[in-house]
Image (cartoon, rainbow, N blue to C red; front, side, top):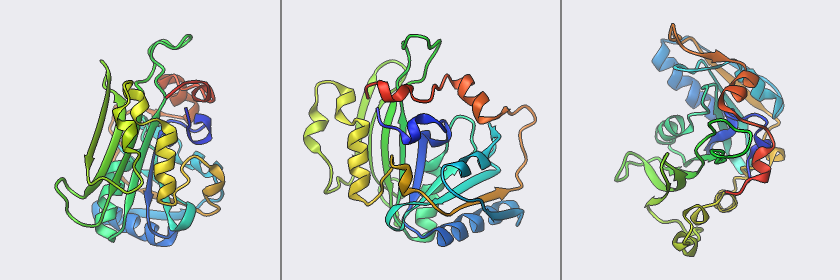
Length: 245
């Protein structure tokens, strides 16, 4: 299964957002939104190259996201990551900023299915998801298209909603095995059609910006280093390379 950096930085990189904006414009949009929510208690700092900049999101936290990271990506896109303990919540941020900044947005999620894998006690339910947003209201918020093959805890489920895009491989959606209807390689091709090279670390950076917001943390909220979070979630870097979609 294809993942960014073989999950060395998962769960941060399990979900990634993309805005079709230059880095400075994306920083202005995100920081402005956060200032409107916090009363101005937001700071912005350039933090260097990728992937080392991902460490600046630590510690990871549950219940609040005081740290968010924007990274230059391919062909005029900017990538989004945050410090949430179970992984970046790209959908809420990209969905809002696509409309607020008047641009296209994409959120992807790739999680290897490790339930039942030898050596894993509980494991994670697998998912490959592609969500596209636009600047205008649609039938549901500003979603343009979603395609997903994911495990809901009982079985694999495939869905495709919204306006079909020119680059979609429709024949695959009829595959007998649900997981084969939208594997990670297909998600990669969909992103490349939009000039996003989602799994190539060389297509991120060199610039990145950390946006810090002064938000209250839940008194009983979990806070962990990346290493601790990986142990807690049973993420083994490199394991995804040997697993099927």
